[in-house]
Image (cartoon, rainbow, N blue to C red; front, side, top):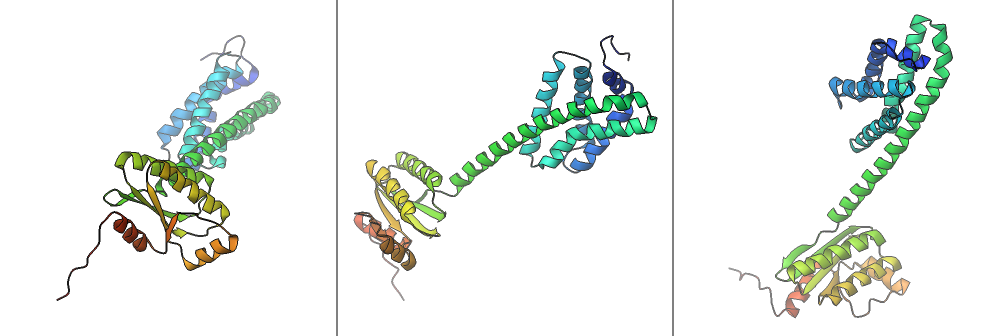
Length: 277
């Protein structure tokens, strides 16, 4: 394959050394992704990138955009599959090492003069790759956080038209919003008259947490649902009193069992144990 009249020296070198440089690049990257990507997958990715690098350095007006788009897609995939930033960056920077090793082997003095500009070119690609990786990773983390919030705020059916919302861990603004949305949607779906919000698993209750609870109760009340807060342990009760937090007319119970018994009584129902004997 012969170069065009407008080829730069570095583009000519990459074309003439395609087999050894590309082969070494595949080898270097393959060492970092072994067990997660097959050799065939790595070869396909890098062969495409190598061709785009050749074209971009030869002055192809469209190749630069195609190259950055291809690198961005690879970076996003690496972020989704849990590759580290270093592993992702090596996928680009290893091309410099591969070319440098070939220059040392051939002792081509003309090639040394081209290496600095080529190194800067690859560095720019590497930085763009890292920025894309970082943005993709942040999105992955945000999506996972949202999923965890949804999983950590289940709404369960305790009895006919009675829902339970067991809370565990820390209750902050974001999680409260998720609790509220999940509960209100469940109320629409079930038409429940009562909801028991159980805070047995909440590590601590302060003014902010109390406000979040009250907002959730008020939102449910606007839907025509009566809420009961259960799991008010002695330590939490003391904290609430010490902070001067007022729950107003919100019903609170020490245990989930007490709350459920209260709700059933309000519903005109009574749980009777089996007779002994």
